[in-house]
Image 1 (cartoon, rainbow, N blue to C red):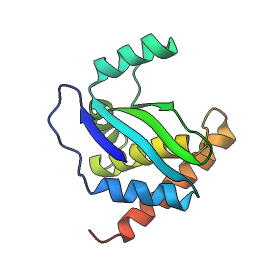
Image 2 (image 1 turned 90 degrees about the horizontal axis):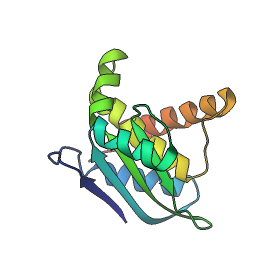
Image 3 (image 1 turned 45 degrees about the vertical axis):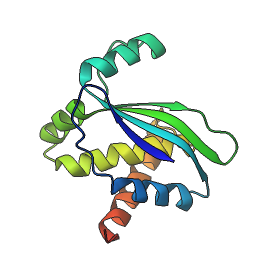
Image 4 (image 1 turned 90 degrees about the vertical axis):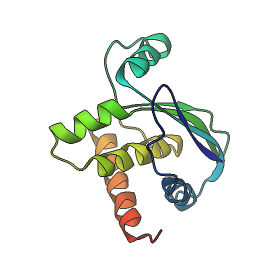
Length: 139
């Protein structure tokens, strides 16, 4: 089950994205477990980054992987503030950037990494693939 939670923010993310995220999981040959997206602001995610990863910088997403075998489970923290800033900086549509980050979290849980340049290219390729599939969906 995919659930959306909000930390001190209004509920703004479309519930329609859940079906698309489920489709990504199935397309990757995985089973859906418990996946929680926690939407927050920069300061909330910065504190998570400091407390759990010992990193002292802003980020748009942090994924905690609880995957067992082919069953994808995890907690995905997403800063909507950072996504908005990134969309503006990159001259992208906010919703498109949000979808990219949502897919990014699922792809991490599916086993994709982005630490090396090669891994990052593959992650971007997969994000683009699923963003294209989103555009083809009818809600």
